[in-house]
Image (cartoon, rainbow, N blue to C red; front, side):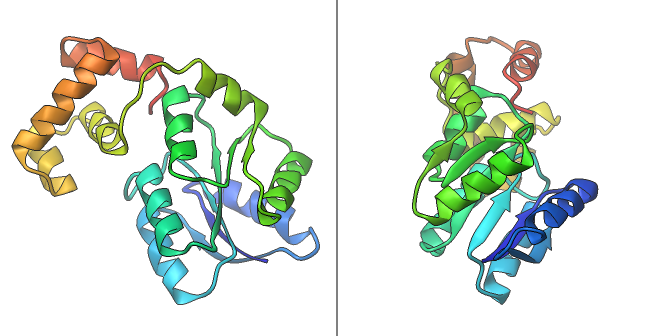
Length: 199
């Protein structure tokens, strides 16, 4: 199978590439260090499997994942992430990732996961399922994008420009986020974002 690795940490990509290419039938044919490099890579050649990190520059992973699954229905996607946020893991599952695994899994666990995914199964690691089960908050992908940009210090006008939204829409997203996370100001929001490990 031909694999695209998308992760912004070079040493992690190199280690993962070494693991995969030493397994029969797998070859890494493309790499992406940011989310905006994923679509061009998919357009340039046929890819069977995308291994996608969550926290990467160049966009929002769950939104990209949903787009890729819609645009390339035969593409299998394994979301491999270091986050333990139930909100994020739920977003990845709901964006139709074929598997959601944590980066602290072992090499044999990842290889077994890939084999199951390529056989048409959906795989959620035990730790992933536990975190999703304890997650009460439900942010939409757009709300998740918005909250991450607020955390990074973007003003509402900047968020609107980056996401091609009106300022009024961003205000509404912000209002919904505050209500769902039960916070009343930006300081409380930043604290909650760290607490929930959304970044």
